[in-house]
Length: 287
Ligand code: PLP
Image (cartoon, rainbow, N blue to C red):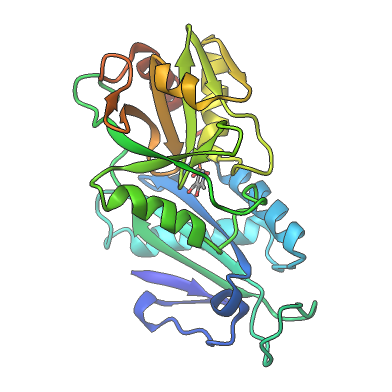
């Protein structure tokens, strides 16, 4: 496939950066994954806003406007269309602080950032069918990550270790909870639960990423007049919920059918999930 590196397009296998890049040495950078279906982006401007907030928090000036990134996204979609015939493409965007000749924790403010982007094949989106959709089986674990999870940082070791925990047991994800037994998010997704006819998702704060799919899902619930609320969600509520869903760029809204070996509700994708995904599919390209 073709990648973008600091203004150039080249085969991804030929892209090279310095080992002194602070992205490599410190995980000092910000990234995004923008889902695209058949050449159309989903949530592009929301992804740009979130990336801008992350870069501001890290005091990195990328020198790229949203229009500049859109050009990169469109070039990568065009140049990779034949390599990824399914048309389900994730565009990964990455800005790291750049190369410093010293290894020193404090960052100089005048480095040229490293700009990198590439295209990869996304899993097929979930089938909007209660009988055909693949239900996810998940583990539960205490959230051991840092206190700035709202920043989409390239330092992902905490997320990697939490994901590995479920993956090596043959499960699909790990749902995380804080010391107060409140659900934060999963290692690469946001969490929703249906409780007494209301869709609940944890409120945004430093403990979770403001997912773009979460945002579009809330818009879809609003559009479809499905009762919903952002509020703390306890582990006990999660285990007793009628439905649990995970949202992310690649999973869209996917039903969870098993938590720690116990069925969620009747162990099948639920009716509210079906309504929510139907509404999501109607608005996703315009959200
Ligand atoms: N939470 C974490 C920790 C993530 O890494 C991701 C995305 O990969 C999400 C939530 C979902 O965010 P989005 O819907 O923007 O993909």
